[in-house]
Figure (cartoon, rainbow, N blue to C red):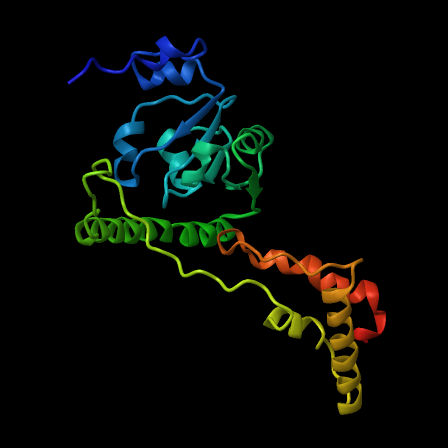
Length: 247
């Protein structure tokens, strides 16, 4: 094993390490409690939190009154639910109650959503609690796929581990009778007589586009570079030459 990673205090100038939690509280304006619910009483026992501090409670299931009794403090306590995306500054964090310092902190991490009371907060807490099961489900799918995925096929001319792509069927080149042409001139509802007139106009326009020197027939399309978007310019020719082709 390699050497242990350097302490945060060695990597960042603004990070300082204290001997115990009380030393951290004494040097902090905002303290974040983020331990498991069943461990919070033991972890916070004996700590003195002055009333000029602000406490952010990230512990699920620990209500504000309970934490206030544990800390024996009159300092503001704000509950929050940061989601995993907070590490990328892309998570909207629910807070309760609204507090300018705490909301400003989470605004820098993706946004803050203050709610007025803990009843509303508990609704969001129940919803976000399903993420744990969701990630466990994705992990199970990933593990199953890894164990059952087919092995890559290689040959002497291919590097080890390469996967041979599946051949794709070639597409027919575009023609005037392609479905995209038919759909372009059949927009809207019309009577039988109007549909016959449109077909005649379209046939005349097709012949003029094919044989007229001013509008040469389109060159064959390479099937490898053919995409559905290549139909669009040819469809627009209909509307430019005969506005009556589509009502």
